[in-house]
Length: 546
Image (cartoon, rainbow, N blue to C red; front, side, top):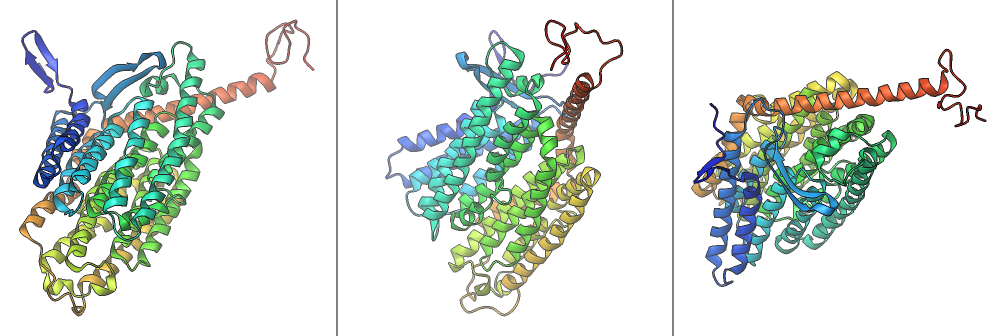
């Protein structure tokens, strides 16, 4: 007999522990606790934030261990009616596609809190970080369109304040640009959600619903309407990824954000858009996603090449890493819209592994800035001579970002290219250039920063401290482990991805079959056609139409 590890014993029988709501409520309760702690208790704010984020991280790891491998459907489902008259419910669930994004969120926030220092408005800073964590968890767990939209938009507020209040340089401009871009994209998604729910109700009858699973199963939307709705979703997700040419907010936001903001933005927030394409593009609107695939593949490949070229030209080390994110996320788009099992698995692997490696890079760049108060590559020469351990850690993370075999960046890019080669061969061939360019800009930046003569001012550059080493050690371990043994992820996501690809193929075949049937019925009269039939060539009295 198999016992569900999420069951707790009570006097009147087993009670299911609501682990998914707990993943959202725990950081929210932490933020609430910070709000009620007196402002003079500066030492307590970080402790509360760290404690609640670690508890949330532990819950996410427990979710990973309790997840039933081999199951394609949603697990740990919670479905509670919320606004019944509009068919809105607090519907949460996790499958192999969202599982590791939930775990990534649970792991990266405690590391961001521990790895970055803040000197002013500490209370608000940690409170906003916890709200951001709760919102990100909600996006990956929501199975109701309205609930998803609310969490998708809620995360904008804490990130806006994190950049605007604790950022660097032209932080107000960067924060405003980030907020306006993503808010505008969200407006398109809201219209698409409302249209989708209303058209679904008209197609199947019954009550209005915003339930993702029900709408995906119904597939009651016409081809033309489905494509317009997909465009609305795609604009919102493309801004969040960001996809070329909607990417211009990202370099500014990353450059001016505080270290923790950059780590969370790269590791978690950029994945809200790529996850949206998988969950709400392919699963919800399969025919429209298939129709839009050539355009999305083209934009993804342009992003790969453009991001790599821009990264090569940067003089600011943090801005270079920001542009590298555009290139890496282009590979996610390439894999997802290849609509193959290998491509989608590769895209999900890149989402997680990019979060780990690029999050670590932003952490290291933040520590460099704390020591030297500059991120200009020309002023950071010779760091390897004075801080060899720091340079060694940076080398490992950099090689993972390049995609060197044996480290976690390689399996995802390999599978994404493999999947794309099956259905989008020429896009895959061009995208390979991005792999070469990634090695160029990262190795060149490393050479200019850590090799060569020691620039004046770098003689006393501090070596990596034990406290910093403990913070980044889990990321280094994951970089090596997931590079050597990616099967731990593939085994759990495989069934869900297989089911998704099968769902897309079935729906696309059904739409094509309906189109062929319609053309045959309207343009090719059947033998022995009766004049008084109800076909398109006759009116209701059996007379020939005009």
